[in-house]
Image 1 (cartoon, rainbow, N blue to C red):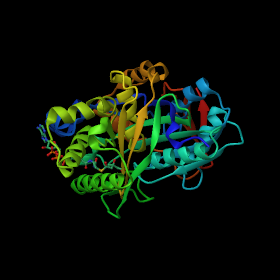
Image 2: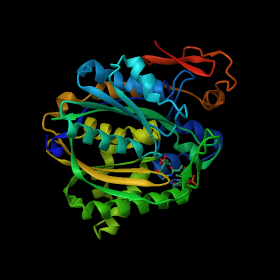
Image 3: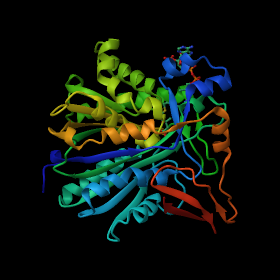
Length: 391
Ligand code: HMG
């Protein structure tokens, strides 16, 4: 058995969509003052999937570089976290397993609890590796966030996938054992099976998030967790980047600490670089925050990073990781920046066209035009079966 402190993230990679809608376009359409988006919620643009992109194509694109670098030896589990599931029975990870050519001796499963489930996946992965340190687990978080058109939530959409390889003796981050947990049955945000956009009570969702931060932190302390002052940075779930600031200010206030803006910016600033231009990627959001932190910060070797994962409904978890010395040699900073910079800006009319595109629900064959620039695409649907292919 290895000590659980020497298990964690060995590699991390993300992928997003071909298109991006700048908030200036949305503001032009709905007459909102742009500062509300840029300053009020802290968002500048949001990723928008092409017609042949979805949670599977983004997930496979995010995981491909991990398999290319590390191979499949010891890889026996793939956990797919999402709240924008494409099937009520089949796990989206099975399509990814096939696209990546993973061994048949792999356990594949999908997990759901709004934006939180990637953290459950990560903790389950750590436990599996603890039982057998020779194994590695692929954790993928992939989501497309959609709210009703012309609703307040529309400005907080986005899409991305993060793939993480969990192993013993990790190269990036050791996950520490204490975890603070919190669950409360609230209807702040949900999506019944018959809807493809989420229902949300915006202000209630912010209060529920803050209540969950407080609860998870309290439990973290009771489990013997670190003090707040020990964290160089904290990656919060970021439905919009200003939410991380609200959450951290609330936490400092609850702990009776100084809520100085410059101090808060020092702890959070680096974690928001990708989320502010990708938008809400639900399950992937907190780990996109980690990617931004690792890609942009000065050397963090040996330093403690906190994670606050929140999923509406609601479940939250606070845990910590220690950055592994030498981690910078393993980052994918250039590829990450390219994924963001390569997106093609679209205008509001093009965004509405993409939002209007729907697969038939009656089993008829429907083939999709090639739009994605990614390595995999959804080619269409036939007999109710989704058809994926490499590009
Ligand atoms: P809204 O009603 O459009 O905006 O909803 P608002 O009026 O609350 O304004 C937002 C901020 O902009 C305010 O700042 C304004 O003062 C400011 P705050 O008071 O909050 O600090 N503002 C301006 N600032 C500068 N210049 C201006 C200006 N005008 C206004 N001219 C809301 C915003 C986020 C509620 C909406 O977009 C929404 O409903 N989003 C979806 C729900 C959401 O993201 N909730 C977050 C917590 S729940 C969560 O994180 C879980 C989730 O990811 C789902 C999951 O778990 O699966 C959503």
